[in-house]
Amino acid sequence: PGPGLAIAGRAVGARRDLAGGGAGRGGASAAGLAGTGVRMGILPAGTGNVLARNLSIPIDDAEQAVRVALGPEHRLVDCGWLRLDAVDEPSSIPAEGMLVRAARTAAAARGADMEEPSSLPATDEYSFVVIAGLGFDGETMASTDSDLKKRIGWFAYVVAALGAIAREGTKLRLLLRDPLPAEDPVGDAPSPNEGSPTIAGSATLEGVRVDDAPDQELAWIESRTLMFANCGLLPLITLAPAARLDDGLLDVMAVSTQSGLLGWADLSWKILAQGTGARTFNPPASTGSVRFRQAKGASVLAQSPQVVQVDGDAIGTARAVHVRLDRGALDIAVPPAE
Image (cartoon, rainbow, N blue to C red):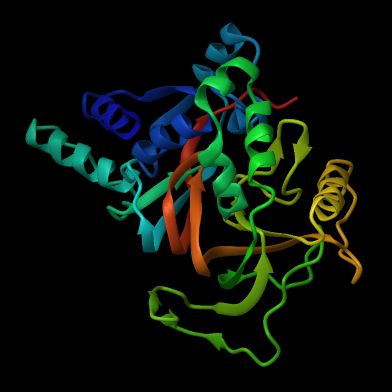
C-alpha cells in the first residue's frame, strides 16, 4: 500500500504525503516518493518509531506530529535500496521497486502525466530509511512476534534477540563502494586484507557479479551480524553514532561475539557506551566487538544463507546482498530547528 498510494496521490496532484506507522511503513511510502520532490510527513504509530526519533518528530503527541507533517520546515533525507542475490528462501513481501514501477504503469494507463523521478529503483530492490542488515539482525526481526509487539512494544525485539543469541555467526566477504578511509572516528574498523586490491568497474564475488563499483575494497571478516545504517538513534541505545540521514553514506557495522553470554555482555556494554559519546575499541582480548566503516554502497557475500531485513521486515534468506543510497532523495517535514 505504501508506494502505490504515494504514486496514486501524486498522479492526481497531491503535494504532500502523510505516512502513518513505523519505519517499515515509512520506508514503503518513501519508495514511492523518492526523487519526486513530493514532501513526506510522518505520523508515528509504530513500535520503535526510529525514523521519527532521528528527525525529532514527536512520537507521543499525535496532534503535534500532524502539525509538523503539515508545517513548512523540511529536510532532504537519503533513501536506501537493498537487493538480494544468491537467494535461498525468497520473501513473501514484494520488493518496493516492483511496486513503484507497477504503480507508475497503472497511473500512466489512467492518463496521469507524471515526471520521471531523479532515479527509479530496480524491480528487485527493497527500500529502507533506517537500517538494513543480515545475520543475527535479520534473525531477530524474523522471530519477533507481531502480537507481542502490540503488547510490550520495543521489548518484543529483545525477546526475539535472546532466542537468536545461541546461533553461530558466519564468515562474510565485504565489498565497499567509494569507502571513506579506515581511520573511523567512532570506533575500530574492519580493514581490507593485506595486499587485497582496489577494483575499478565491475567485480565478481565468488560468481556473484557486482556492477557500477568505481572504487571498491575487499575484506574477509568474521561477523555475527552486518548492518547498514542510514541513521543511528534507537530506543534506549545509539547503535551507529556517526550515521547521518543526509550524508550520502552507509554506516556499515560489523558485530562479532565469542565465549557465549560473556561475549554478548561485552558487546552490550560497548553499544551502551556509544550513547555517551565514547569511542568503541576492540582490544585483542575482547569477547565482543563492534566495527564500523562508511561507504556510499556495499555488497556482502556470506558463506551460508543469512536472514535479511529492511527496516524491521524480514525479506527472506540469501547469501549475498547489495546496498546503495540515493542521497537527498526524500523531502521530509521536520520540526523547526531549536
